[in-house]
Image (cartoon, rainbow, N blue to C red):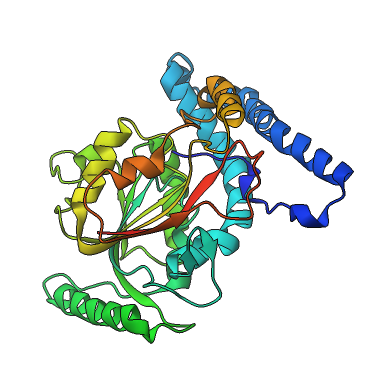
Length: 335
């Protein structure tokens, strides 16, 4: 459901480079999205061959389904593992631990970690599933035991302590439920394997529909109540959701008061007119090769306008250079 170039690889500090090295890095940075598109293109022939071997001819005859299958092949075979390797320990784990401020990663927590009931938007192939166990204690409630309410109280108490400065390395939140929103059925087998590998079968539930049907019992085997969610997690996925303004407002409505939205997304270039123009040129081709992903969405602005926020602590990672065609927003929105 999402995509991003090997973006997440850190750049060398400009102050340490010679002019020639700076020029080289700049050229490579500007060419990077085209390299990424060519890598995606290389997965199309093998996707077609695989579909022929599986006799899934109906997929070949449907442009939208073929694009989904192609993107799944590229994402699970190359893009996802590389982004997970680069962005996981360096960005996503600190984010969910509450160790980011102003778009930068800190050594010690500066806010509460992920906890309670979680909606993961664009769960995809389960690239981040194991991270939940790394950053939080998992405590699946027993149906009808009343444990959910008790645990939510414990979580709330823990968050109050953390907000008043009781944060320290090693403190974790308690996750009781994760709803992984992933409407692309091609991703579900990979996602199920990731859930099983992380031992989260009792906690993680796949939501096989779009955001608009989260509370629709007739659309899937479950229902999420509005105003009941402690945390929303969106990692490199809002670039491809349909009707972003509408669906981001919808996600906002599921957060309870004090709920947090942890976000790491690529966004529209704001550096200069020529980088904005260059990003738009790349974006002419990008969605066709990357499963409908759009480069130039003003995602930060859209989330800010989704509703009233008690606190917004987001920014562009300072390590990212001006010539990056895929800049990012990193941080937490608190309702």
